[in-house]
Image 1 (cartoon, helix red, strand yellow):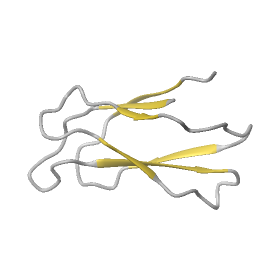
Image 2 (image 1 turned 90 degrees about the vertical axis):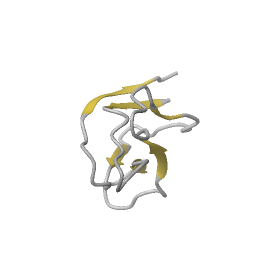
Image 3 (image 1 turned 135 degrees about the vertical axis):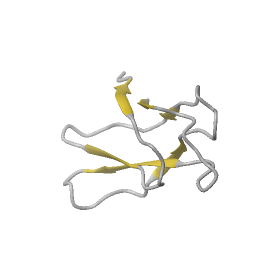
Length: 83
């Protein structure tokens, strides 16, 4: 499980439900298809961006998070539950 804690509920009239993308790479050059999560609609302050069922991560795997929507982005922390 990966949880990206961000300031949620930052949608606005132009972008009502902004998105964050997660993709993975073994070499930093080629990337997997992105998996998306929402950052929360206007006023959804308790919304959480969680990716579950990620499979096994290799030892030197890279995770990349991308937010391209024109909204305020505040990243607070990234938390991983490693079993």
